[in-house]
Image (cartoon, rainbow, N blue to C red; front, top):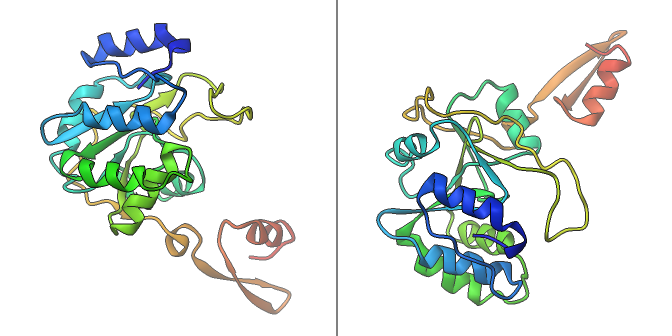
Length: 224
């Protein structure tokens, strides 16, 4: 899916993937996302945004991972606390979480596309595509599997939707050619991301969730 303002990037991706370009026709990201989903065929549809950068062996990696992902959508790009937690925990294939979110590049099972579009069309109060996609899968109780590493990265920090320009790069970007996708995904939630631990100092003991700001302050203050 692509915007005319990124024509050069879009054509480059199209050549790399041998894929159709679905253009934004009316500055409506959900409309573009919907038509991209409808353009899919076969068992899965892969959608890459125009500012995506592909890792080495991208197509081979995607073809391999869909053999194991089943009915789950697959997020090929992610950043944020859950992604950092997965990396910190040494996850080597993928992790399970809510979503898909941050849909720079996502694989959707085609069997779910009609219901996803119907659900998204009925939520006109949600302007963007991410909350519609996330909401559909939350209501369907279907988790997203996120790859480690991310197989796609943002080309830069400029967004055509938001005026804010935060760091939009993946937490860990790399090739999936050597990843064993048969390894079951790791669940990432508050219990695995921030487990409760005991800290001691001067005879006092307290429980705190690890890797939170409170935990960081206590460790800096000498709690062990």
